[in-house]
Length: 60
Image 1 (cartoon, rainbow, N blue to C red):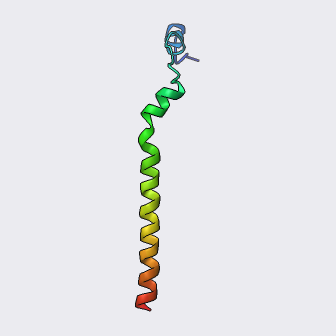
Image 2 (cartoon, helix red, strand yellow; image 1 turned 180 degrees about the vertical axis):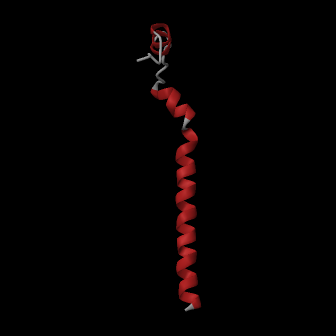
Image 3 (cartoon, rainbow, N blue to C red; image 1 turned 90 degrees about the vertical axis):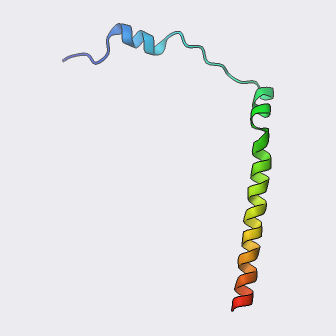
């Protein structure tokens, strides 16, 4: 059987790269827009549901 990866390739795939784990402050700064977007999506969904209910009552 022939090996698909050499020892050198395996070492390159597993070694050396440092992973940066963001702090809470960095995450807060990076994702501060998410809460406002979720709020906006929720309000839009609520408005569309209300519109559907009104149309169902009016058109029936």
